[in-house]
Length: 156
Length: 160
Length: 240
Image 1: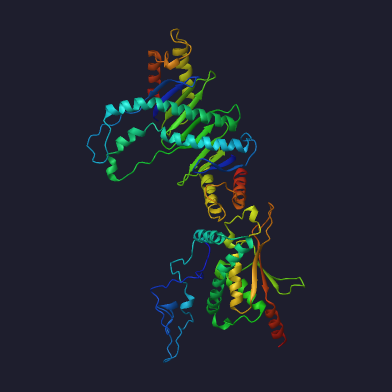
Image 2: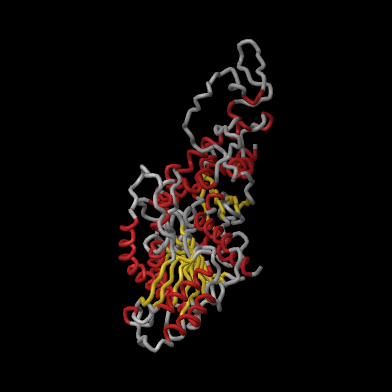
């Protein structure tokens, strides 16, 4: 039940934050590799939103019900990625920021943790007058609070 | 649990087989005032054109994700599946670099077994052991034989 | 939700209020007016219009997030075309100064009539700041009040706050580590001191350490340095 790492990607696909919390979960890779990973994932995320096999069929079926004023959800990108050794959850905000949380396969309450991380982001990064939007996150308070929260989660 | 489509890619990164089981688009009973609707025959040709594009996109996605997972989880890690809000994609790679990809709805659990079964019971039996099919299936030849297609269809419909 | 009073410089005129000099506001404090034929009338419970907050919603509270965004914009505004950290702190100080001036009057008039005296010496003034001002602004008292033990500077006093509210969400980048945005609060304190005719210079200094186990990483000391004439006067009054 451990959280391995957190990665934050901005609107353009650039890496703005990455932090590992638990050694031994994921392989150690350099910052450059993380940058490449973030860019790749950004592209893949966009493609997966378009691969929706139900694309045409939903619009046909719903065209008669759209008179009721219900708009179908726009296709969303990748949300969960599973592999043998880890599990990755991707949370996309309304402003295009992606939070990638890497945990082990048995982690149960990833939603709650993701929500809490997002809250911390909005508090300690967005309310900081010295933070420029879409730039790498260098906020001391954010690091501190995040670390203490994840440590608490990992030690449960 | 609904299965939407199934693809096989060989080790030369080519799509050698693809099959969809999507329900046909519902014929519009009342003519709706909002928005044009695509008449069925047109949508067939559209989907025929875009299905090869789809296959390419799927392969690209799967390839990138597989590399990402290998990088993060170590060389022996294997990418199993991913899920979006609309569909779920399952991936299975054999030792001979044959890649099986299946798209289902979001409520399906792991299809690894299913893909494994398809590989051993259908692919190996009806394609590999077929003396008339070539070793390299360039352009998909040798894959589309009757027994394989029938067997696959039966198997999948049995699951749905 | 923290208790941030509406004591900020607000120039909006509430349309419902009519400034009637003789009556303590419409339904002011629920008190009935006592009349005494022509003289100035006060409601019997002593609560005038100045006791009611401007923000009359049910909870009369402000969300901390709104304040945080507003303050963040104030800091960015102060940062424009500024040459260095000293000037940035000076600008924040100037932004807080008029608030202090107005708060002094408001808080004094809200005291119960018995203790409504002007602070006449340094210690009373500083206690007023530590207790009344902090309670009004932040909903709690300041943590410590100290006199400088350095004999060379007997005019320096220190108000210590372990966790200034205004710095709650701000992480200062490493290249500006001397900056403390509580310079704004220092400006408010300076306004109060100047308004009470105790001219002073107030600055904010961060003393919280960067180590892991630090209890209060944002601990701030507000250094109040009075002008020499204040000390002279204090000495004279003390003798007399």
